[in-house]
Length: 283
Image 1 (cartoon, rainbow, N blue to C red):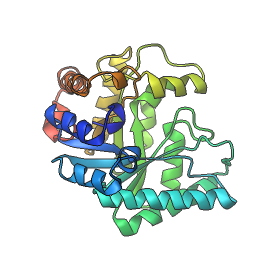
Image 2 (tube, rainbow, N blue to C red):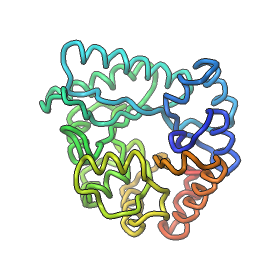
Image 3 (cartoon, helix red, strand yellow):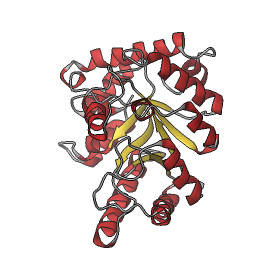
Image 4 (cartoon, rainbow, N blue to C red):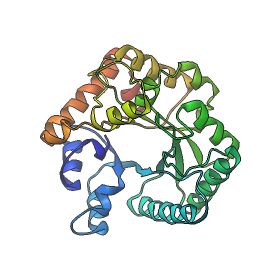
């Protein structure tokens, strides 16, 4: 589960996730720094929850900037990496830039991702780079992989978000170019209508109207995607990242139970080898 899916204080989120039978949690930095008793109290709550931390999100608009903007984002990245270390997160998620100030120079983007990976090395943290389907320069998996592959750093890989793959109607063949050991993280969700036609529509749908796997209009395509990721040899973590305005107004336990049903949907309808149970990475 991802705390970004749930409403309420971090302690209540962690309890609902644990009660639903999950064993891992992907954390939103906002849940930690926004704690009324401070970051230390939030970190203690996570460490005492009994849940393994999958990672921390999200570093935005990092690559392609210059001058004071670049220096500012370096400071932001350092703070996020330190927070990840404090809470025991082995990975941070960085998404492709949507900033109007981001430049499309390939070599500059590669250099920025190398720098981010270098900052993470002393802390023992991996960086998963995700293509947003409304990114200013990078908006699909192939572009994200090209940058990560060129950067060529052991602790830098790509993240696959099923929403962006489905919304962009990205062919599964795009996964064939990605080395399995460089796929660091997978996020799963669906939505209830046809693929949004514009970047603006994709952004609004992604931020307000995602649903859990098995609840949306693209179950067959989502199942094919999960199988393709499995066949690639991926052995990492899966997380439900479901931004949904309705879920944010529902009791935590009900939302967590919907997530639990989604795990069962994956077991029953997607993986012939019962992927989540076999690897024990989603629950």
